[in-house]
Image 1 (cartoon, helix red, strand yellow):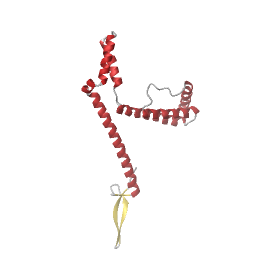
Image 2 (cartoon, rainbow, N blue to C red; image 1 turned 120 degrees about the horizontal axis):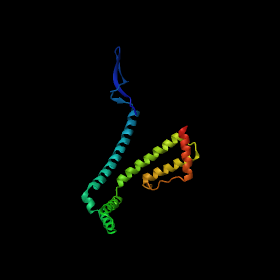
Image 3 (cartoon, one colour; image 1 turned 135 degrees about the horizontal axis):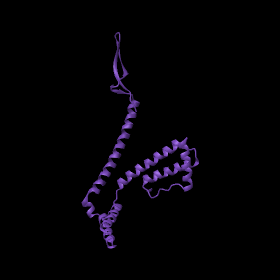
Image 4 (cartoon, rainbow, N blue to C red; image 1 turned 60 degrees about the vertical axis):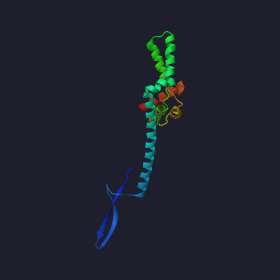
Length: 190
């Protein structure tokens, strides 16, 4: 938003004088409507900054916990990894395979809710971007396009709520998928 600033200037004509507001880049006055709008924008920006600060604090706390060797050593995660190491070793595998399996178990059991939520939002924004690209390129010219856009919107919602994972990537039937790709490539060529 651009706010027009004004400066108070005194005008003279004969024995008369009066004050007028004139536009000035460094003036100290603004219209009330501009002031009210800028206040709303500042409040919205403050809320956004506060939300981002909370996310950063959660991510920082989570990462600090991941870096703490002592926390790992006493956590159930470490115990699960040790059990996997022992069971793999007992099955006759070499030490490298045992360590590999143990680390995979420990990493799979780590809970990083703030990081997971942040990454889910990033993925959902990627889906939103894809939706906007499809809308811009296809302009709903093919019946499958609207269906695909609806499916992508549901997928973005599921990502944000934590219900969609990389394992659940099949959103369209094979037939719909082929029709969508055909329509999309036809629209891109135009």
